[in-house]
Image 1: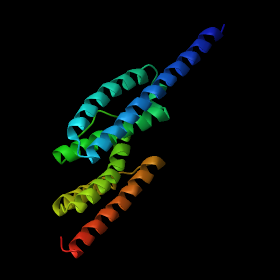
Image 2 (image 1 turned 180 degrees about the vertical axis):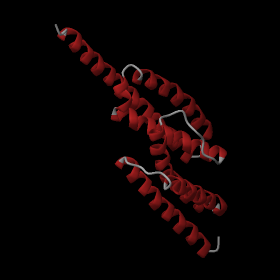
Image 3 (image 1 turned 45 degrees about the vertical axis):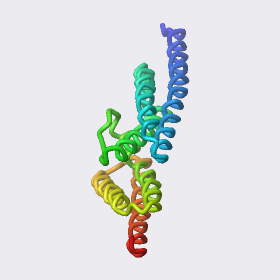
Image 4 (image 1 turned 90 degrees about the vertical axis):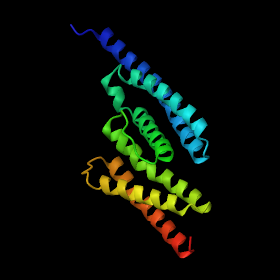
Length: 186
């Protein structure tokens, strides 16, 4: 005999865990955006505090996701982790001048990495306004390298392909910015 009560309880448990995942995902997402904003304002002490906080909140999110294998494929989890990746990659690039590896699913890493050039374009425009041409060129070269590496993949996922295409447009913006700086004699 099928135990319908047990089946019903399993569905309720999943829904309950999913709600917790969505709520915790929002926390990670918000902290990611605050981290990026702090880095844009050159407030690295605040960004460092946010980085510690986001790491703790990500651990909580991962604990919830481990309760059921399906939870790791929920959209709210995927978005939160890719934003986490983008924020942490951006922080480390600005602070250390290089990309780092993260302990996240490769797809989430690539999605965050593909969003990173958008933030780097904003940083480059800010730096150009301050006359820091070499820093702008370094960003352009890094985005060029990221794009070159991403082109080597054969992405089947439409989300990733679209994001990789956006890297191409970010690179073009940076190339135009560098050209404009050269033409203005900076």
